[in-house]
Length: 396
Image (cartoon, rainbow, N blue to C red; front, top):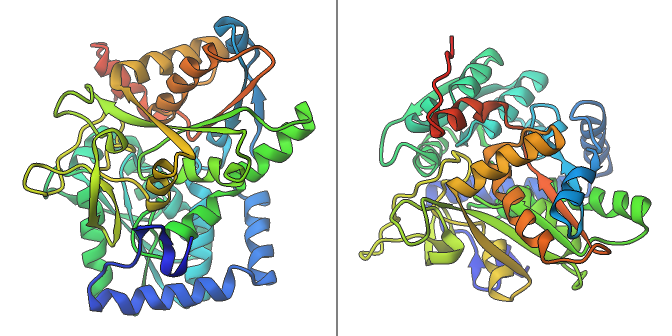
């Protein structure tokens, strides 16, 4: 990365003058605290004593034997407090906000996991919290909406556009512009204007640091491949980052193909996206023929974002990471497979990575190792997968 959060041509700070003041304030605060021993120790204590880190690196023996290829390990971010990797970033950002003297936290959420994690940390640290969520996603993830309310957060539905993650981000930015003095915007992924992509990555890179240490202890070596699902890209960036310089470790991101990359109902940014500026950053985005940001679709509320974090765009461009597109049907198949094979119900987002890893493992030899970053647990997705399969459940 070079100056101002540029990853070659990607990244940057493309925001109105009214927001630039807040962006610069955040940049200065993060630069001041990121290497501060007191801040680092406070965050490490929260990771350890509150978030349940280090998360388990689990050897999936039955899955390994069934697929007949590489040895499979699963990084169990689903076992973190709140059930996903999102808590890593929220603890870091909300702690930083408190150091900055902010009284109110806002956030966007798609599947609800970032919203739940933000609401959780705000309850812990005593800050007001408002979460913006597309009304379509609120319907898909009603359990998480109730959890956020239970934790004391106000959940504001967004009906504009496609009423999904993109639109929730738009509303959060509007709020931030109006309340800059008191409010901190806790972005949930490695996206947005600098310093967000770098800051969120830095709070998530603990995933790859732990994988490296845990696998060296278990196997005495590095993995041959690391796989993670990609929406905006925070869990994948966290799982990849400490391996970027280890050129023998293959990195695979699994994005949401929806009903197929050859249909309008997709969120496959890496397969179909082109360069644009949106949400404060230059990156790859799905666009229509007029250059407008295109509507996207995925069974996964956490992956239906029409863009990708700038560092991922950079890793793709230089060939350091590969990105594959996984359909709804394939993700549901992987959701059921991992549940029945290892007794682990993955988030539907994570199921995209499970499918990609299943396909990759079959091509590898038995002396090779693949790690799946299981970004979250699937309790929130059970009703939706049931509906997808035509099974009616009583949700009362």
